[in-house]
Amino acid sequence: MKYKSVFDIIGPIMIGPSSSHTAGAARIGRVARSLFGRKPKWAHISFYGSFAQTYKGHGTNVAIVGGLLDFDTFDERIPYSLEIAKQEGMEVTFYEEDAIPHHPNTARVRIGDEKGELELVGISIGGGKIEIIELNGFELKLSGHHPALLIMHNDRYGAIASVANVLAKYAINIGHMEVSRKEKGKEALMTIEIDQPIDQTVIDELTALPHIIQVTNIAD
Amino acid sequence: MFRNVAELVQLAESQNIKIAEVMIRQEIEVTGRSREEIFAQMDKNLQVMEQAVAKGLAGVVSRSGLTGGDSVLLQQYIRQGNFLSGETILDAVSKAVATNEVNAAMGVICATPTAGSAGVVPGTLFAVKEKLKPTREEMIEFLFTAGAFGFVVANNASISGAAGGCQAEVGSAAGMAAAALVELAGGTPSQAAEAMAIALKNMLGLVCDPVAGLVEVPCVKRNAMGAANAMVAADMALAGIKSRIPCDEVIEAMFRIGETMPTALKETAEGGLAATPTGRALAAKIFGVSANSRES
Image (cartoon, rainbow over the protein chains, first blue to last red):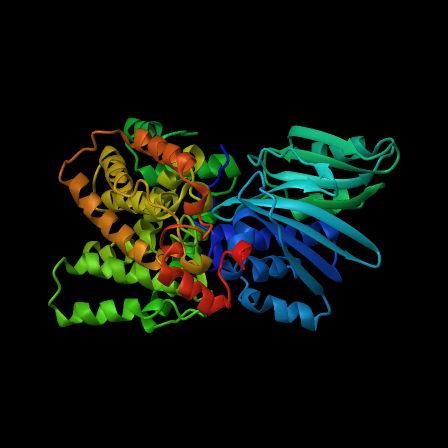
């Protein structure tokens, strides 16, 4: 079951005109912003499939940039996000890709500043719901059925155990978990599907653990 | 958790509760949130719907200039009193159009189930409100009932135009609205399912072919017809008419049609009305080039 909540169907409250192309895009942008942890200096956004062909008309461009500016789907500043990004010194470039994606509504977002970069691929599956299918070259196998935590961390002893301990302390059950890394001892990613939405206290506690770089909640 | 319409109806009938109540109980169970929280969130959605209808009826125009003002024309026409179909239907149509005109103008709406199809459910609800005088609670329940049917469609077929064509968007919305109208009017859960089946059957095969890739033409008027379709389907079900093809099989058929529908007719602005001479000319006028970037 891809959709679990009635509010996936009646909702989200959003700026028009398209839940998959506008609200979904805003959410993809906002997950990227959240994973990056700060406002990026630059953004290179590639659109594929239907996104590539109709993004101008659907405001997919303003929505995804709105997300990068940390705007929610109903933020009335979304239609003006390109101007706002410019004023705030964020340089944005769009690319229309010809490649046929696995899903018709696909965006690849590369963002960065002098301190670092982040790259993710998000798909908008309808009604404003999204899935992140790739992060910094890691392929994500999120079912989309459950709330999920994406935890970038350093590949060190005890990093995984410490995360599991915090979740256990708050009686949060792990339904599915994957760990992937690029090289031994380097950056790694935990993908954790949990049974219930998680609150900010838990996220703050996870973020404060040693070796943890970034914690992102994709409950929506 | 109900997986299809048959289970949804069975759950409601076996416990002698409304479809809305089945959805509310499931939401509580799945999310662990309280009934009050869930009602409050749905009430907020209802408020956004009301504001969008009011804004649309006051008159809006989209940035492209392709849509806007038709809900105002319809209200004026209703007031003249010489209409052919019926006041409640036309009121539903005008309120559905109002919502989608606001959506096209990048205003705030509540996706129901999507933004492109956001007009049908509130349009029909606010039209029958004049007639059935529901309480606030009943209006919120209307949205839970619509949501329950949409939930089944989303999980078993699709509610995305890019994945399943307009049948998945306005078709789903019309089915959801029809079912919720039946329940609000006092019909049984199985009558609600019949209404959903009848409404969705008559939207099967509907392609998604937005001119210039904008959610305007033909989307706004398809919401109008989705609302009219929902009203008639609800009346038919309340009259005791059944769909020969069960609701779940209609949903399955919709999914399969969507799977076999060419990509050109799934929100790519490459086919259908978008590819007509006027459609292409409008795209060129709005963007300076065709909405289809590969041809630009």
